Length: 253
Image (cartoon, rainbow, N blue to C red; front, side):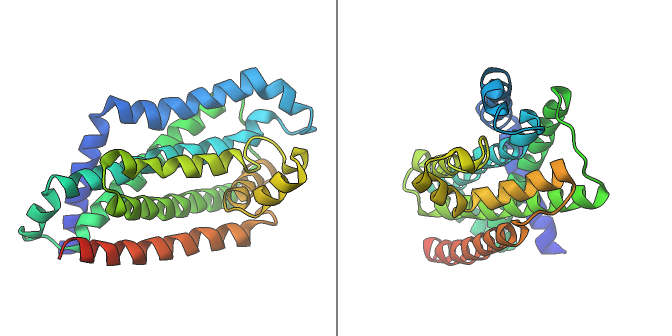
């Protein structure tokens, strides 16, 4: 119980920093919504021709949600790097708190804030025409996959925050993940890509994750990529979590 209480205390501290930062709100919520509006109303008609009966807003909503998460997790890396450089982590170590709560608090706050941001983005998508055939089971699986992806990338952000020498460098890794989203099936079918680019898109993690989310929401089925998507998320979570704990121990000895 003490560990859970300490983790929640640390998470609340981090959440307060998030809600007080206008820069964070703009990056995590407003930017993905602006991107969604841009693609739907500026590029949507061009992309719609290759989608048949599927509306473009339905097609890109999963990618926009993934983009929201990727934009948000960078702040977990930045805040952790800031705590390390300012010596706040060392102060926490002198206090009667569970050692695991320090990283756990950052992970919890990042997960909660990113899920809330994703919910807001989904609401805007519904307002501009997004519709779904998903039932309770499909929505449950969609939420579960979103939570798992958020946890996996959050621990990756924490790992990067531990490695980074500057706060600016801590959040820079998220641009790689954003790049992968654009080089996936998030905004256009992979069939429209050049052969080499298509091969890359089909064999990187974002495509099966987005395809599974899209299938759950638009078709009401789990789709063919669920196993690969789950493997990517679980594998990334386990590797990032284990490495983050090891690096944290060596950094704070």
